[in-house]
Length: 195
Length: 195
Image 1 (cartoon, rainbow over the protein chains, first blue to last red):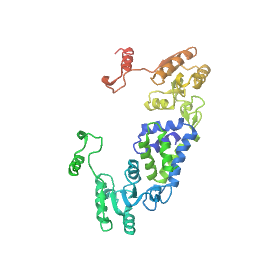
Image 2 (cartoon, each protein chain N blue to C red):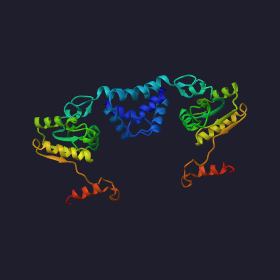
Image 3 (cartoon, each protein chain N blue to C red):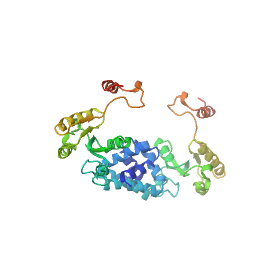
């Protein structure tokens, strides 16, 4: 097949990239300098070759244990459970958490055949049994699957961890009540705090 | 630097891809199978290795002359001048043109230091001198630079080509007059046709 068509097809497999965008990106790569284009190709190869899950928390990293697990200035006694490295990254960007993580590598989704055995649940239980943390903060996404996964985890972690919490649900900062969905507003009222 | 950060940075260089989208794409590549990720890396390398400008029309292609110039069922006597292979592709997708092309590889943009010498203008003049076509259709983009480039080309091609045309400007199909800009509407009135 034509190399340009092949490139367009491969770019189309990326999330949120349709055929028109893929064509635009392909021509950008075509018209870019060879150095720039090959730097992108090399960066893709590098992540596949060098990035592995951390043996402690399963965060994707080029070193093992990952820089977060290896950082002794972080509170190793406080574990934040996230679905994936994308969620971990979002929490890190916010800069509000100085503990360590456990990356589940997905959520329980029975319809897609994903149960606890497909996730790093056993590894989490073993980890907290071996060295019980002060607190586990369940930070899966506020979706149906994320909530169900957190509920499941809170149950099986209970015997081993003194304090298990779930990140708060409520109205997002900077939003307008008019555009907030019913579920979010209902949670915001339920979780209201004294002023 | 961390391979994930490097990949995010490289993806950020693509048009229309900000840091958030780049991060999402990077993690998609991280979580994709190695085969899928390497197929994308290989596709990028392949276009840079195998794609060259056609020696006749300067369309980017893996063979020379390009499949369009080599296709004897196409009207070799009718040349459509486009800015780049992106424009060529758009005309091809529309399927309304059965002649051949000449890819300028840009537009005249004095502010960016791009004059006729930086474009395939000399090559176009030589081409029409060697084998004068029946008609040249100027299909640069309907932008200030595209219009100026077409005006310039029409002047220098005049002595060699019996008929030089410019694609029509008017209201786009499926649009709503309410949302059409003044310039387009003015051209639509100027170029109105008998019913």
